[in-house]
Length: 193
Image 1: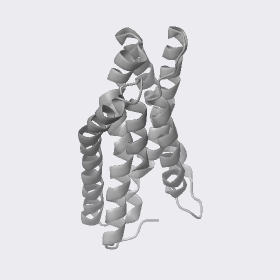
Image 2: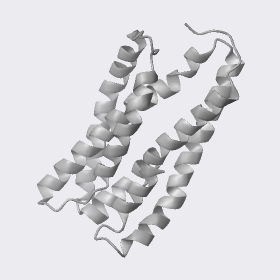
Image 3: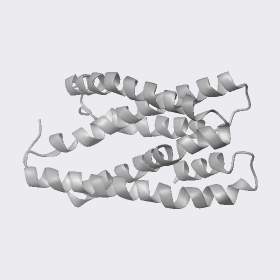
Image 4: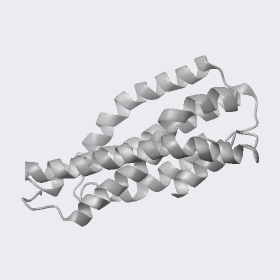
């Protein structure tokens, strides 16, 4: 049960940090996965677009499903904590797999891209839904909830900005050492950070 209280600065910084870290992955996938699929992995734009369409259709199914499941959980750790502890680790792994250039026939590449992208989106939802829902259980005070959401949004925007600023530089640096334009190593560095 939520209570009326001032959210400590430490928790606001934690909320900011989670958004920052989560959106390193979101920024990478949102900004660079289409280019990776078409220009590095070598699949067609039509195949990539079909993957994105199927992923959005699956999102329409799993988002409300996961939200309703999470809403019914009442454990001693709370509704969201276990998701927030485990999902980032899984997202990190799947983000790295999504930016891995496999050497295979075109059908296998398309299937690999589709499975990793849809799995990434599913795991991201398992992290993102509780992340945005958490402010409602932190306090009943609407002003404090606004502070929490503002901290989260600042982290999200900083994470996306960092991905868009640093990933191209890292990929360019590692490109000379790889056959995937430096994407795998750049993704690894971003995910470790």
